[in-house]
Amino acid sequence: MVTVTALEEELLRLAGSVPDPELPTLTLEDLGVVRAVHARGTDAVEVELTPTYTGCPAVETMSRDIERVLHEHGMREVVVRTVLTPAWSTDDITAEGRRKLQEFGIAPPRPNRPQASGPVAVRLGPTHTVAGSPEPDGPVCCPHCGSAETELLSRFSSTACKALRRCLTCREPFDHFKEL
Amino acid sequence: MTVTAHTGAALALGDDALVLSHRLGEWAGHAPVLEEEVALANIALDLLGQARVLLSMAGDEDELAYLREERAFRNLQLVEQPGGDFAHTIARQLYFSTYQRLLYTQLAAQEGAFAGLAAKAVKEVAYHQDHAEQWTLRLGDGTAQSHERMRRACEALWRFTGEMFQPIEGVEVDWAGLQTAWLESVSDTLRRATLEVPEGPRSGAWAAGAGRQGLHTEPFGRMLAEMQHLHRSHPGASW
Image (tube, rainbow over all chains, first blue to last red; front, side, top):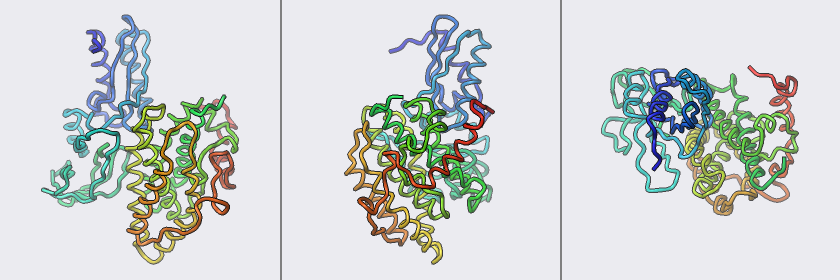
């Protein structure tokens, strides 16, 4: 068990409060991408950041923003290290993060089904969901009107982490943060 | 740079991702519909992210991407083939994403330098494969025109697929099992798309495949010239 000092707790809170550069309503804490902070003495710190997607271009901005915030809070030396293991999953998005996504007009990811072991079990569902669908993941609901009847338009949307869908009830297109 | 088995494997996997990423990027501004343009660019971005991690394991990512000569690249000849028409791009995606998903699944399941990246990337690649399969079904089982063009594309690229199963030194992979699973998966998709599994050779004298040894096809040199010229003309430039 690693002990987390009061200073580290404070630094973790600060790093987590940085807004996501692409979805500024969400913080890095909401996204679950700040993995840990390790204080080195009283004024140096190392932050572990994990990317949502391997090629996520926002990682560099996130790192710079974390550095700036921690410098402003008296840290002389801030090192942000990118870690890939364990791989980030949409299950790392907090309940608060999901609520904010929904509010922002983005359908939050559905929970991934638990895996016994082993790394891979992405199963891609059907393109069209309806209420009470036999799909174990449940439907992707429209963030505008709440309807469960929605269809997939494209597996890739404005960013790699989102898919483009359309609501069949209110006809509005919307982004869906797809399960990873 | 000394090429150990480990850096050699990082180069092979990293060059596959880098070169295919660049080829997919060539669709920007040319894709048949906007959604598809965005999809191909997103897939390219995932691959570029993988390439950056892998090439950084072998050395300086920029030097490796922009300052190596053609013969120093270790990518498969499949990924360097020009985009061709949309059907060629989809056939290449089908062949490659199926391979990459199976390969990364194996790498993710073992202890090794590539396990972390593979575990992460395999989840992204699942979406690439799904994208390619959906398009293969739609084009193969579409109009007479789309069926014919998809058939031509699958056949034209078939001879590049044997090379994927040449063992890469530095990674422990069940290559024979990988090939069996690949053939099964691709054959199943082609069948569902009302397309026939191509019959041409995939290995031997009439097949292609020495990319892992640094031998590349003619279009690759032109692709590299375009990819590298800015960096070579303005060394050290940044935005």
